[in-house]
Length: 160
Ligand SMILES: [Zn+2]
Image 1 (cartoon, rainbow, N blue to C red):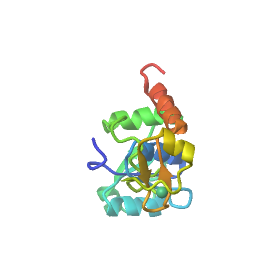
Image 2 (cartoon, rainbow, N blue to C red):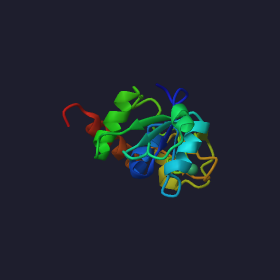
Image 3 (cartoon, rainbow, N blue to C red):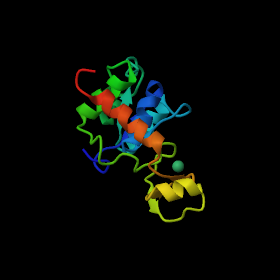
Image 4 (cartoon, rainbow, N blue to C red):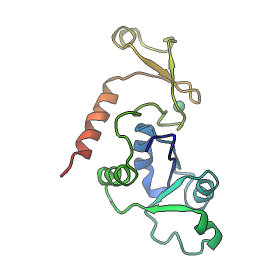
């Protein structure tokens, strides 16, 4: 599935997973201040898959809300296994859309030629730059981006 076809909300215990989903280019809401019932309400309203590890979530929730919600319990305890579980379950693309979304703001990045905020050595080395319309930061495929990708590929290798 592509980022146009699926959107997520990551509950309280799954913030790192949410960050990695955004890094892969998928829309995922939820943070330290926005989780649980409030996040579930938004997920239902916006037709998002609600990812949670809270086994007691269903208790005390209204039936009509549960009927409309798309709740997925993430079984894996550790982040690499969680990424493998969720990308596998929803057949997410692990390469095509990486770094197309701001990991902090969850909005799509736009290609830019404005290098005002880019250090001169980076401007000389890199050829492509992206701008986040929400936080105003400029990004390039620097070494930490490559390191993240290498780590991700390693995590997703079968038999890890
Ligand atoms: Zn941003």
